[in-house]
Image (cartoon, rainbow over all chains, first blue to last red; front, top):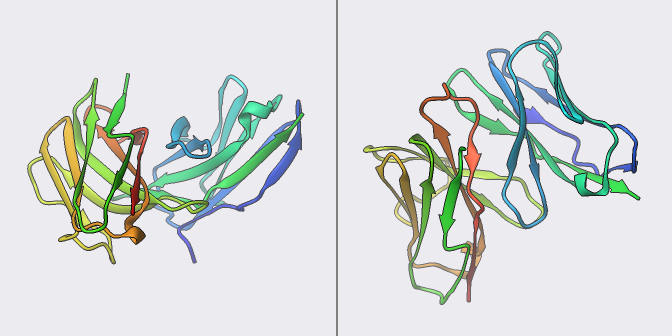
Length: 110
Length: 117
């Protein structure tokens, strides 16, 4: 079983809709959680990080963390075609190392 | 803030030659830098972790004599691909962790696309 799991997609949503990206992790000792966006041919860029259970909002992005269920999600409101990319979930474990999921490819159709 | 640069952004080299890639943290000090490799349509693969002033820690299956890593200062790490072969062609990405951020994530460089002919 992979340590950080994501559905590879593609997840296709219409422009203006809410895109919901999910990630599960296996290490209960994980302390912090990150979402990166990676456009094709580019390196990942950090979008958000979350440490505490609950929701964290930043503009159109909301990260949700549920440590009991070991999942973290990213919601993108009012999705735009420019949001089309691969979204990587990363988990920081007790050894302070980041483990990445395989990524979910999001396609926002005009 | 938290800008990481890489040089070169792309390189083409002949089989058997060596290529050096530089990774710099421009506006912060990085105690730890990471080197990843990514093949087309695949996820990031961590190659090695380097701490300033000490030897790099390589992931299983990564040849340390082929991929030489030097982390000589808090702002610079280099990856040298020695005796490159076409199968080494890939997208190499470094990332750095800000020593003052308490480990809050990693910041990625723009990547180096290596093509070995």
